[in-house]
Image (cartoon, rainbow, N blue to C red; front, side, top):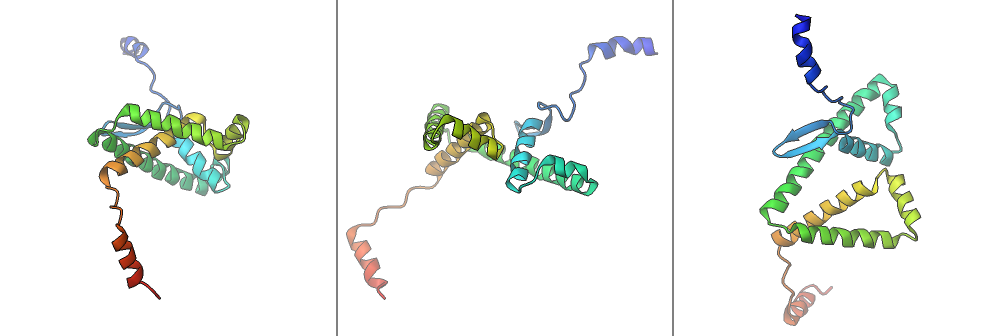
Length: 171
């Protein structure tokens, strides 16, 4: 029996470890969240709270909280990806426009820092890689472009409307 199974086992690739950065922790509707994305989100949250994963991993009660945090973060990431994908697809957002605007915003953010070194230090302090920061900026661009298409700009009031408003609201 063992000899019969050996060729099949040898030919199978080993299942990835749940801790592997490419391990898919959540998926559905053409969206997947990898362990690396989840870890980054959790690390950013913990860092913003002045905590670290190591602190949570030492205490069994804290490990449960960390597990709950990972579950919530996975749900958030899936929802975010679903919304962004649906917005880009259903509103026919141009991939080229998204990338151009993302590049422009990144350049603007980098120009705000006194130097490239300080920009990188700021990213490190917030627990972000430049790649993760770019992904966040790209998501912001998609949301902004979707809102531009979904929410029309309010009409500019004419002079008579402005004067009427001020007269009606004088104290």
